[in-house]
Image (tube, rainbow, N blue to C red; front, side, top):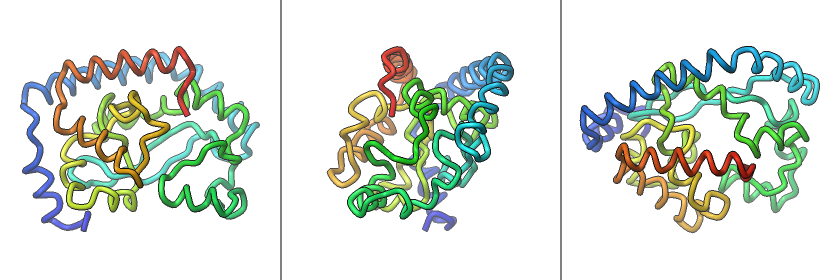
Amino acid sequence: MIDSEDFARDSRQLDNRSFGYKAVKRVFDLLVSTLVIVIGAGPGLLLTFFIWRSTGGSPIYSQTRVGLYGKRFRIYKFRTMVADSDNIEKYFTPEQLEVWKRERKVDHDPRITRLGRFLRATSVDELPNFINVFLGQMSTVGPRAIAVDELQWFGGYAPELVSVTPGITGWWQVTDRNEAMYDTGARQERELHYVRNASIWMDCMIIVRTAKTIVRCTGR
């Protein structure tokens, strides 16, 4: 479905953002991503060493996600889990495994390292996302960049979800991210709410709320 021309065409037709909004947002994304990459290059290199020591794996973790109009891309993050984290059967209980298959996250994930918990709480693990922002694959604000198999939860609304560029932070993250789940439909509602109401004002509000979350270290 996602790789079909019909899916991409339908998604483009659902993109109701104005040219002015997209232009302003792209300029902002370029400025912010360039600033973060330049300033964070030195500390980031030092951090990769500590991540390698604590996880035993590559300091940078990448995974395929769904981008604008359904185009796939590789997302980059600082590794926060053990090197063999993809072997979920090794670490999860049957109950956790069931939750993971449905939500792609579990509470008290045993694969996360001590350093990884700090990186997640402060959202530092997502700083490499700004490489994706610089490349135009992501935006500072937008729906969460999800894996291909997560699109099934959006059903016929999947083309609408990817009619805007995915973001590092978004409406789902700054509302009740840790409670809004796929199986209740709450997460879909949060993501689609942003898609349908995206504006400069809403983006600014989300950025302010994200900053408060980072200061309080409530990310997960």
